[in-house]
Image 1 (tube, protein in one colour):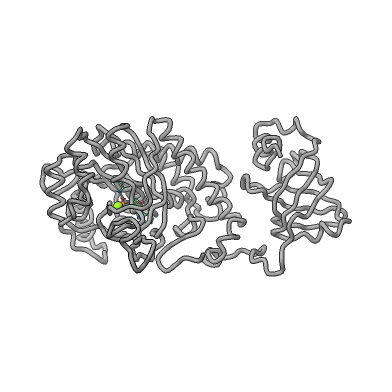
Image 2 (tube, rainbow, N blue to C red):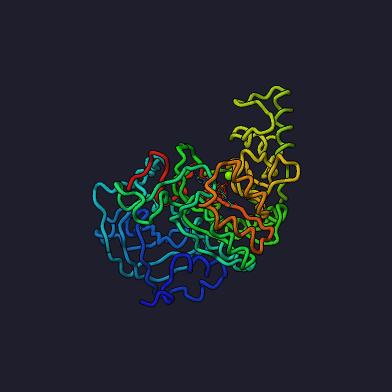
Length: 461
Ligand code: 4AD
Ligand code: MG
């Protein structure tokens, strides 16, 4: 089969938008897809067919005297041979006049999708089917599109994609919330001859040597965290994008993050207008305005210390926080992030220069001796979308911080030595891919952006 010669519904919609569908008006084409609905009215019947290529269903008009076709139900797979028919006066600008409809796969009585709306909670119990619903069909199309533009952005800006390992013996974030890996539970150290092998929590450490060689690189892959957080924003398995670049300081890191995010969001909005319109209509009425603003307005840059003052002020004016000891060193919770982005700054903010105690060992130590050149991008409705920093590139400073934290220096010798041989100032950040999908679709739970969610106490098959 020559796929390039077969039309999808998306091809037809694009032709219609470009005004060239009339060139194939009356032509016979083949389509394959699954039935979304079927109704007959006297002589004629109408099948609504989706092939997954885009949000739109095509209307297939058939002769209702054919009882076998009239009996086709939601979820049946069919192929249709029919003539394209332009209907500029009707709600849908074109339809397919069926000449032959063939049932390819029928549905059983217990098929779990029905015409009536199912809850997202229920649909989470059937991940193998939920992509056939309008919402999830659109979510995973947008997810794929975002991934494409992420690669495109980096490719066009001279970044090389480095495939960092999933199995690792180093804990990048130093929180120890890792999934252990071994071949034999009775002899866990035997296979790799290492005491502690686990699934990666970040590709950063492994990608840094590449940044010091290639200048601009990134990783994009599965990431695993064993934090016992049962929230709408945490998954045990998620995807992370981590650019890392040389001769770059904290402000360059923020510039890259902002330019990159605005690019991928605006390109995805352009490419998937129907999906985005659907999310706006059904999921989140403020979505398009918020995304337009995200793309157009510069992100505010605020230091941790300034943010702390704003929270203290709010407290004095009577705002209630669950945690309200705003002394230097407090690790902001989601109530604080929400207040800062939604009430104080009313938009995304870069929060920079955090106390070193609440950030990872590899971050560049500022001259004040208290803070590090870290940045989190906080976004209304999402919270932390990205986290990054300039890296400590001075050998002695990095070593002394690692000693303060009682880290196993031998295990990180390979990393430390990067600071003894051709060290370069460099920076990077990590973007949680699912949180980006949440931002662009308006979906409220990370479980609804992952094809097969793996979360705390939550894995089906
Ligand atoms: O802030 P994090 O922990 O940063 C790092 O891992 C750095 N090594 C990144 C770097 O500088 N290269 O994680 C980065 C992002 C967070 O901002 C968040 O969006 C996402 O990853 N993230 C999660 N997403 C879903 N579920 C979880 N459990 C997540 N933990 C982090
Ligand atoms: Mg973080």
